[in-house]
Structure formats: C-alpha cells, structure tokens
Length: 229
Image (cartoon, rainbow, N blue to C red; front, side, top):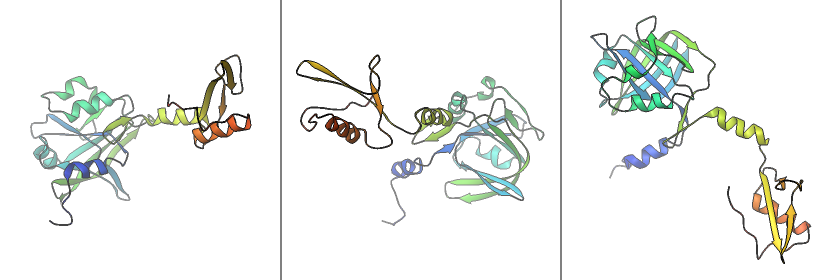
C-alpha cells in the first residue's frame, strides 16, 4: 500500500478540524442562468494583483458551467445564512428562487445580507487531483461588516456568539456548589440570597472547588461529584 493512501472519511474529518468561513460560489451558465454551490475551500491569494481561489470537485453538477465561465463570484455567508448554505449544498432545481440576489457588475449572482462578496474574472483553472482550483482576479467587492458564518468538524458555528460568551465571563469559569452534610446545607459562594457561586479563574473547576472546600475544613476525597451543566 502506498504511504499516501488514506481512508477518505478519516482524512475528511482531519481536514474538518480547521475552522473555515462558508461561501456560495456563483456564476452564469452559457444560457445566462445562475449556477452556484456551497464551498468552504476558499482563500485569499494575493493583494497585488488581487487574487483569490476556491476549489471545485470535478464531480460537481455545475463543474462544466463554472470552469467555462469568464467571471464568478464568492458570497461569504453571514451568521444568519445557515439555511442558504444548506440549500446550495444540496441538489435542487431552482435554489436561487428562495434567495434574495442581484447581478453584480459582471453579471454574477450576488446575495443580499452576506458578510462580503467578491466578483472575479477567471484568472486560471489549475488541476488538483479530484478537484480544480479556480483562481479569480477580483474586479469588484464589498464588505458589509456582518460576521461570517463558520464551519468546523461537520457543524456550523457563529463566531460572534462564541465571542460574547467569552467576554461575558472574562475567560473565567463560574463554579456553583450547594453541599449537604449531616442534614445541613453548606453554601459555597459569594452570595447567599441566590444560588451561590465563586470564580474559579481559568483552571480546572474540580481542583479549584476541592481546594476551596479544604480551606473550609471539609474533606473532599470521598463524597462529592461535579456535573457539567
């Protein structure tokens, strides 16, 4: 067996560990009908000249139209456009009917409410195994300021939600404990009128809770447990 022959599913999962943006690549076929597909294999290449690339499977339904197009566009989906990504990742007769879009300066479909869009002239099509790399030269673009939709390990995520969660806790872990011993409650925390809690910093919650209990004169090695909430 060759050293570079791998299980395709395992290799795909390993590639999926890298978080990416989610895009929909669009163009027009020879009859000027819109075509498009969801892709996360997109990257910037150069500022001077302004180049970017996206990878397209040779088995894709729109492969002939895409690779023959003189222009194509990249729509970087915003966090609220998960449904658009799913729609363009599945075969359907008229995916554009459910999307608000307009023609760009060179006629490519540009979606509304995207994080950013780029319209490109086809700079090169490079063979790359079972895919091709479509290299585009940017002819027009716009950034809306909206956050982009993320994708990793087979699932979508919203970067702004993760950022708000981190900022609200200051990067620290909140620990709450209500203990019972010999029919008496032992609150552990900074407040008594609500469920008590204290800051565990950025360390191991179990270790910090055990340390706090030991400072309170309680043995912790034989009777307490933690739950992930």
